[in-house]
Image (cartoon, rainbow, N blue to C red; front, side, top):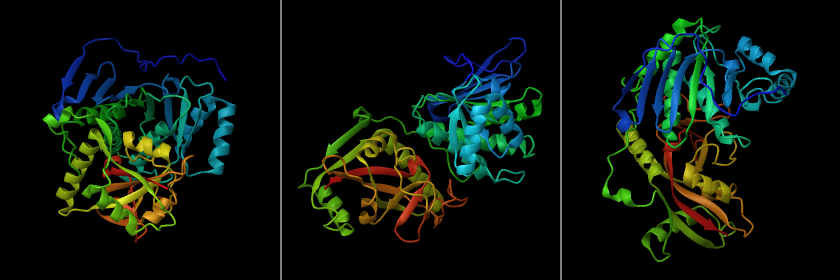
Length: 415
């Protein structure tokens, strides 16, 4: 491996004079978005809750960031990165890509100054690619960040995907990628992640288009039917704890209702004893879920909320209660009907994923889930197909792809 100085993150270098600097504060989301603009210095930055989005010019392979993103189907860019990373990384990439050609993965950086390289396949990337192709690239990168165990990823660099060889419409690509990143940061408001889009210095048209879209990110209406999710105003109830687990009284009506629903579809063989039932109170999660539910009801003109089960390990349950039903914490439930988070109306099915701890205790959530407009899923789906909100087996399984689309209201511990 080469000798590299990666102890700190550095801004992309540009060879221009330092000059005027302006700041613009937007009103959206109670001023959680702010924009810093310095077009002469070829930098635009938008703050999104705990994270930020940057558009800069420079060379991606020279950035001292935590991770850089490589779309594996962009051969020229991919080969350039591998050449500079060195033979060991090139071999790692070749072996992994041959073994699992449709799976995203990360490697060390070799001779590059970054810390990790995220390789993301995108076989559908072309001049006519739709929004879901670009959204999937962003989603896959975020999932690799969540799954990364060796280092904390706090900065990541994307190329201007599709704006070179593939000849995609630059405005379309810029808007789609930037909105996808903004959504991911909104879903994780405490994540201090800096997301950079690096454009080659000679591509002034591409830089200008990305800069324009970034500045417009907070002022234009959403291009989809989905309305922006805006936090409600604080109330007196906000003095309550942000996160709390309340054990239900077995004599209470709520406890009896949860037990009744659980017992309907789980056999006595699978559940001989209910140890306890807890009401999960996570204010941030619940607010986001309510905002999502309001949007679903407004858009679909009907209530599509379902009470569904999700079985998992004790460790996964602890993660879910604090970080929601994201694909990093949700456990392994297969991908037969899509690569999202799985729920079922059949507790016996969810039981198969509720692995016991050393005491023989299992964990299962009874969750509120917004199934919306659903369609038959398959293993190739990394995001929900356009026009739908979830995928299904056509019977009792539902797969969702957005963290705020489900809320784990009750946690059942049983033997």
